[in-house]
Image (cartoon, rainbow, N blue to C red; front, side):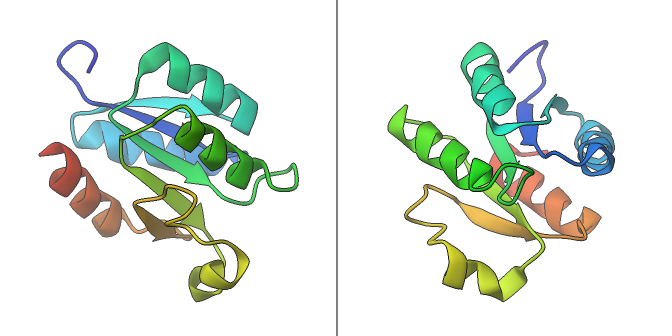
Length: 125
């Protein structure tokens, strides 16, 4: 928490997705910390100790999202991690989200209602 607000780290290489996440998260009274690359996401994870993480699985660099999730798990992350994915049910064929340390999957295009439910369930807001 920072300034009485839960911190949500958002990692995606699409600036429009990052902006959408920021607007939804802030409308629920939380703080969004954006990162445009997996490397930046890992750095901001270490700097901010977020309460929840949302990360795109398929960013510009091949396996960048998968690498980020593996690094978070290796560092002992216990906070909820949600994967952003546009591949839907095919995600399980490409990666085992549970083995990667993910709590769940958020489907693109992003559902405001789904993200709102997750924020309320995991953070109480």
